[in-house]
Image 1 (cartoon, rainbow, N blue to C red):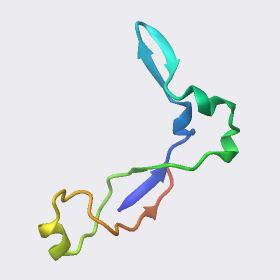
Image 2 (image 1 turned 90 degrees about the vertical axis):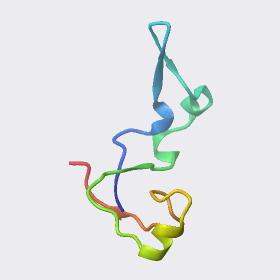
Image 3 (image 1 turned 180 degrees about the horizontal axis):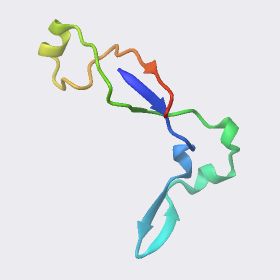
Image 4 (image 1 turned 60 degrees about the vertical axis):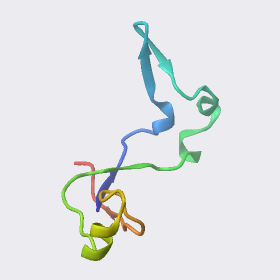
Length: 74
């Protein structure tokens, strides 16, 4: 599965509530960005599955043992 890293830490995400931008995870604001875990999203180029595991999985898009192929965000 192709994945790319988020451009900023997801712990810094904000939600819009009552027309106000609020942090969803206040506790993480005190942690330096370099100390946060890099998170990745499905870049959507391709996924390669073992046919048997794909067909027998309860959730076909999330099967155990998926290996990431990290690509640049660009």
